[in-house]
Structure formats: structure tokens, C-alpha cells
Image (cartoon, rainbow, N blue to C red; front, top):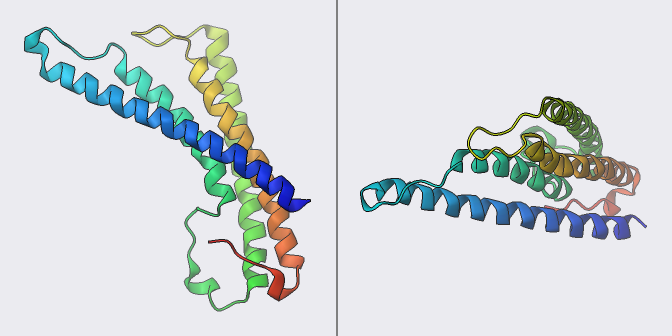
Amino acid sequence: MRQTIERVLERLAAALAIAGGAVLVALTATTVISISGRALNWAGLGPIPGDYELVEAGTAFAIFAFLPWCQLRRGHVTVDLFLARFGPRANAAVDVVSNLLMTAVCALICWRLWLGLLDKKAYGETTFILQFPLWWPYAAAMAGAVFAIIVSAYTVWRSLDETLARPSAAPRQE
């Protein structure tokens, strides 16, 4: 059952990460075009209106789009100097604690994003130039943050399973 759940989460996390990557590519193109427009101001061109607003909103989404993939694939930075001396079971136990902490941090971030979204929506705040509602980027980031909680909770289960498994059956994906 765990492998089925992991495959589903992996597919969803990959799709979300690809969407985040596509947004970053679009933001890069927007930035290049806008900077080129500024450089060619003498030729009647100019920057893309609201380019900073678009980059800010898109980057918020992209960060949270990558977070579940990174958590699922054990991509966060670890310090293995001390833990290398211990076996797979001890390392899996450390993973349980770190995954519990990551789940708590993701829940905290999601909660604060939710409160920010409600605040921006209640006051009807919009961006200065493009005038799109500020709660939209919060909602986009929330999608990734909610999924990051789900993935982080799954990684706690995975780590617990690896901790309780026989030492030879506790594979660590790198």
C-alpha cells in the first residue's frame, strides 16, 4: 500500500514541480523581455508593465511547487558527518524526527499563508500596476503548501516504516 501511495504522491509532486518550472521559465522570459525593452527604450520599446509584480507572484508559487518534490525525494540538505557512523535504523529514526519537524513547519507556513490570503481578500488589496488581487498569489502558493503538508506527513510514515523494518530492508533513496 505504501508504494502505491508513494507513486501517486510522486506523480502529483512531479506535475506540480513541472508547473513550477514552467512558471519560472515564463518569469525568466518576462524578465529578459522587460530588461531588453528597457535597453531599447530609445527605439520606442519599454519594460513589460508590472514585471516585478508578475515575478513576485510567480516566484511565490514556484517555491511552494518545488517543496513537495524536494521533501518526497529527500532532497533537503543534511549533515551526514555525525550520522554516517550509525546504521540505517538510526538514520531512519533521525528522519522520523526531521520529517515531523518539516510537517510542523509546512503546517505553520500554510496556516500563515491562509491568514494572509484572508487578509488580502478582505481588504481587497491589489497590485499597484496590474491591479490583480493580491490574494491570488497567496492562493497559488497555498496549493503547494497544502500538498507539502500531505507529502511531509507521508514521509513521517515512510520513515517510521523504515525505522521499524529489519536493518537490511531499510533502503535509503538518494
